[in-house]
Amino acid sequence: MPVRGRAPGEADVGTGHVGARGTGGAAAACLLAMLAAAAAGAGCESDNVGAPAAVADTVVDAPGATGEGFGDPRKAVNGVRGGGDGTGGTDVYSLGYGAGTNDTLVVRWSGRRVMDGPGPEVAVFENAFRIGSSGAVFMDPAVVAVSRDGETFVEFPRFYLAPDPRAYSADPRDWRGFAGITPVRWNLDSNDVYPFGGEAGGDTFDLADLPAGDPEADAIRSGGFRFLRIRSAATVVDPATGTTYPHDPAGTGPDIDGVAARYLEPE
Image 1 (cartoon, one colour):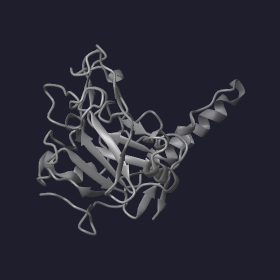
Image 2 (cartoon, one colour):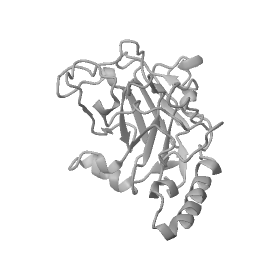
Image 3 (cartoon, helix red, strand yellow):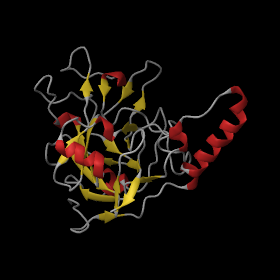
Image 4 (cartoon, one colour):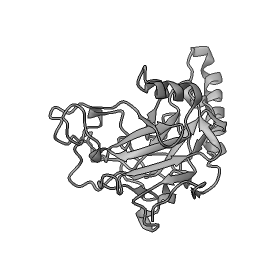
């Protein structure tokens, strides 16, 4: 049951605004902390008092969708409900490893575009989780790209740094610039924090990191983007090896909990 754009037919679940606890509440708490610590010269990171955030609320393309269970792409636009550091979330839409058939998801923010601003503009929440105390993480890495028109996408730079680039590494430090690496602590029902404050988990992306000198990347930085695509890294070729990125033998594809953005403006 592929899901395509609303004009052509998007699945829309609302405006996707993050609630007061996740935006204004975090800002107020940080302001109080700053006032209390002023005499000692302490403060808070600016991200904690950042611009209001919103989750992507519209599925534009989900070629592997079945409409049921983990095959329901609406679970990727109905709010983030992470399971914490040690448990993957279950309110997710699962991608697969079939190139062109079930390995991608495209979402957007209805009636809005995401503009460039200080710090990261986007946070992608998958369901990675830590394995014991070894530092290893169960991950299903994904490649993130953005687009103005839904046709031409620009991928965020990424680097796989494992000693053997053809073998899978469970060390999150080896996966730079990928989504699906960091466990998700943000949960709208039980831990509604600001998605860009550091407490939420997930993986953030900054338009400033898009390829320099690329005309489309430059246009996105200056005029914003409307569409965001997530693709299983296991179906993407690593330029360093000429083969697709490796994945955990137990993996079946990234499980997308949601995508948040800030610096949104009306189209």
